[in-house]
Length: 113
Ligand code: AMP
Image (cartoon, rainbow, N blue to C red):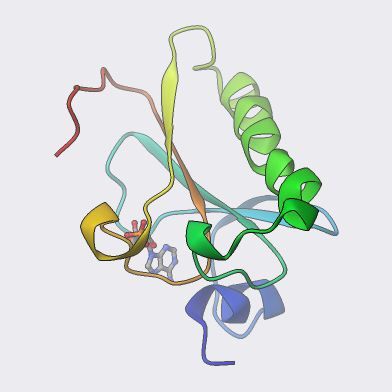
């Protein structure tokens, strides 16, 4: 499968990995939008939020759990942070392997752009 994030999972493309276990990988975004910008992905390929099934619930639950662990480890959990999942064109999704953005280290604005 010609998927950029699958290639990162498989080690075919280098990334700045901050956490991984058998199900989840977290690595730094190459184009950070905050002082800390980490992408958290399931190691198995799921293209978009629209492709989720009930059977993915426990796997997907690991993404925000990983986000809050990293936020605590990196020291910005109490100040706060943002997690984002973009879906398809209107959501601004550009890589079609589902991922949770973890953004921290600055004041976020609302509404998002
Ligand atoms: P999205 O627009 O929600 O699909 O987010 C995709 C993200 O992947 C963007 O923030 C990109 O900067 C990031 N990205 C693209 N290629 C890489 C890469 N090789 N390593 C790390 N992050 C990447």
